[in-house]
Length: 121
Image 1 (cartoon, rainbow, N blue to C red):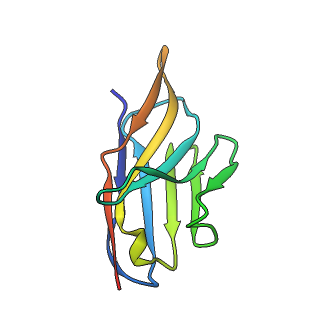
Image 2 (image 1 turned 45 degrees about the horizontal axis):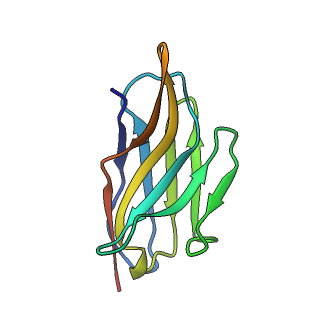
């Protein structure tokens, strides 16, 4: 069973920074596109940022210029550096990958358990 394990959430004041990390829980050969989604109370889950295995990135308009997604393929880990945080960034942040390659097979659509980010005004 492949799991994605997030860390780095917490409480921060507006204007502050946090760095989220997400790592695969077992040895895998490769991970395809990885991304971060978030879900605020009573709102739909939305894409925050994603990065392909080749390093191409995509961001939601609301976080462009403030958040940076990166990955370390050797560690099967993805990061989300969040700067200039705003109260409206408050949400549960989920790590996601659309495909991983493990011994003998591929696994699809894997989500992390989520980590809470709270930004106070």
